[in-house]
Image (cartoon, rainbow, N blue to C red; front, side, top):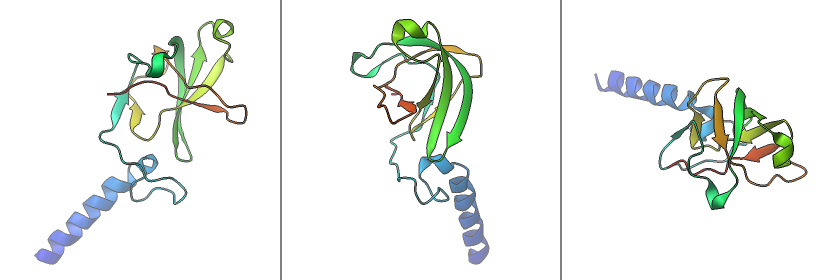
Length: 127
C-alpha cells in the first residue's frame, strides 16, 4: 500500500513538473536558470508599467516558447511614433503566461532593447 502511494505521488510530481518546462522546474532544459516565483501571473494587459515606461497599443499575433523564454509577438500600432519596428517579440519572463487570445489589442510596455538582442523584456508589474 505504501509503495503504491509513493509511486502514485512520484508520478504526479513528475507529471506536473514536466508540464511547465519554461518555469525552471524539474524537466526543464538544463541550460535554463532556476526561477523562484512567488506566484505565476496571467498577463493580458499592461495596467502598471515599470518605472513610468511608455505604454503603447499592440496586437498579439503569436505566442511561443523559445528555449527558456515565453515570447509574445506583437504588431505595433503606429510604430514610427514609438521608434519601434512594426513587429516585436517580448519575453514574458518565467513568472507569467499569456492569458488572452490571438488578435487581442492590448497595452504593452518594454524595457530598452540592446542592439544584439532581438527580444524585448516586458516592463509591466504583474502583481
